[in-house]
Length: 135
Image 1 (tube, rainbow, N blue to C red):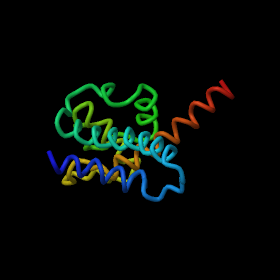
Image 2 (cartoon, rainbow, N blue to C red; image 1 turned 135 degrees about the vertical axis):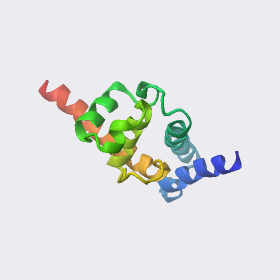
Image 3 (cartoon, helix red, strand yellow; image 1 turned 90 degrees about the vertical axis):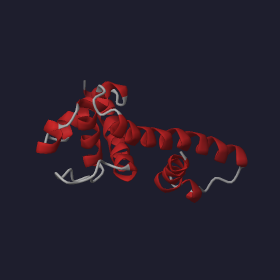
Image 4 (tube, one colour; image 1 turned 120 degrees about the vertical axis):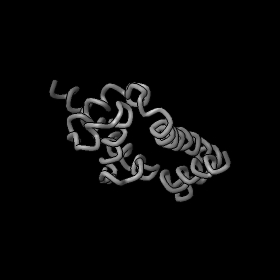
């Protein structure tokens, strides 16, 4: 259990770069870290659920929009075509973050899931703005 807590804190420090914040008041920093904790937990949870329950439906972990965008952006490879449903979607997410998905690669880790989440959030924002402005 200890290493899982350490992994969460690594996500918080490395992924969110919480220590690099320029906020000067304690209340602002507390609010920022609260949001970062949610993000760091989601990345950690996605990595863990991919390893423990790859057969779960992908809707458990990702929104319908995220799933649609992943299917449009990342084409199925030999590895993703044979992967269980949740694992397939999270491998695609990790591929957005630089995961190569080669046959002998270990499952995607926190770093590539984090990078993939960062990209899909930006892509989803653009998608939503485009739909709102241009139908």
